[in-house]
Length: 459
Image (tube, rainbow, N blue to C red; front, top):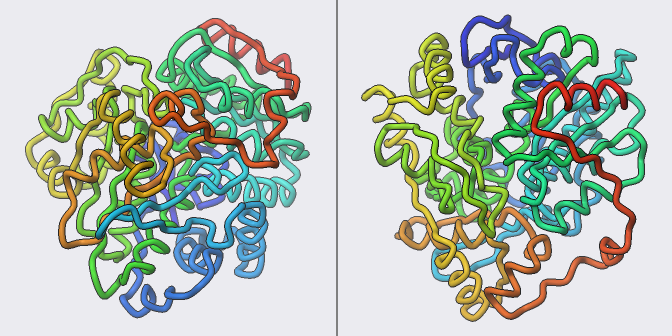
């Protein structure tokens, strides 16, 4: 299995190389040279299996000879041992033919744990084998950062620097990043928004002298390993609802397009998915793009679902690559156009995207109303991001079972949830002292040189 860049000029890499590299040297994102498919019999065989067994079956074709079967099974077992639910990703029924996929039972109460815990195990295994040490730099709108710090804290071969927008994440999200005491993790509060943080990370990867000097690696959703780990729960959910013998649809609250792109990969692998529905908040660039064929940036407006307050959705580049039939040069040209504000998608590529994805948006009022009504109707307390998903999903319900991804625990957004529902969502007992732990954070200007100086000083 080889991995190629969405921009067409970087060398093809193995799974291990693509995982440790993150962003390709031509600025593109790695995708598999071909997508393995599973037969209906192989998918049916997943019924009744543990999450870990399904994870092995789904991911094994993508990793080549990076790990042996026994080692990969061991890494998967370690990754999910700390989850707070035996099913790892349980389904809860909200209404007739509408189900919630709870992805918040990991160590940091967000879906990012599914990928990050496994990435942490795979990085440590690969680096221990080679004796190398790397510097991980990531940008977060809230959940990726805490999941990365939790996965890599205390590991001997890794330094971790997480950039987050100062004042634009919830207090729980911030404290999950700033309270770990291990010396190899660093939380950097940047004076800007998430897109500024993400742009800084990409600029660091494109500064090849800096990249080589600090041995830079990335674990944002630009990392293929992140996407791959998220493909698994589409299979576990769909099989629980009757796949491959019947189709299942999914609605995904998303800002960076990584989680729903994982659903696209699951569909390409043979999972019978009817609809993939993109759910956005008022920062609705993905919804507007799917409606108009024009990807045009507007300003980011802070919302009560901050992890979706994004205008530059990195993983959309992967979707464009497939929409353009693997034409890396065209993707590279459009990414250059994005720097000056946006681009128009060609008719053929736009038709492919419209055939593959549906979309919708939720206002702040819609989101609050959904938190309140879902609590009253089903007893489920939603985080604001999950509420965006449930609101959009309701416009796409039909004869096919709909699964909405619940991406975070409501306790991560206590103020917004209480304001909408009147209910206080308590933190799990293992986090009960989170507000009492001392914080360790460095505030940095939105300036590439300043950020690079901090990183070089700390490693």
